[in-house]
Image 1 (cartoon, one colour):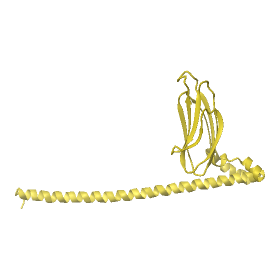
Image 2: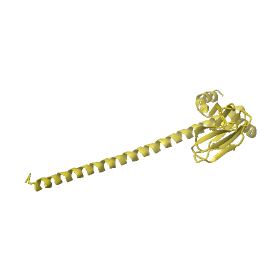
Image 3: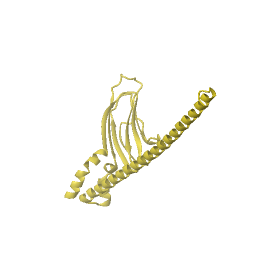
Length: 208
């Protein structure tokens, strides 16, 4: 039990990064988007609440970088959403306010958004009920999932580092070849200039 608590304390900063909570005011007839990068095969859950205004509708849409719609709700006021990422991507959560009243005639709407992904998005209470787990077993399951998430993050970082290194090596090779080509061109141009000037001076009988 002590080890589990100690491990949870060490991994707390990672848990914090998996929770995203924000509140902001959305002006009428405007659009505001929030973006976040999330890894592949990660469960994302969210809960939102939008302050109601007369003659105003607010639409919510969540898309990936390819504009695929992961969640959409017209005239959204309060609700929840969930999806699992298919690839490492940049995801965009957009709130759009529409009203015939016009800007400045309707107060701004207060928007509250809570998002969780990875370990924090899982409902361990439900898992405990289904699998009949004890509290310590639930905590160990959470730590196991969190450890796996951290390992996956490090593996992804290592992969990106290797890709960047390969790119750098490829770029260095191209720069080297370009430098050699440039030197050959300069040497060829200098040699041609010497022979051209030699012929020119001979034609003018300035040299023998």
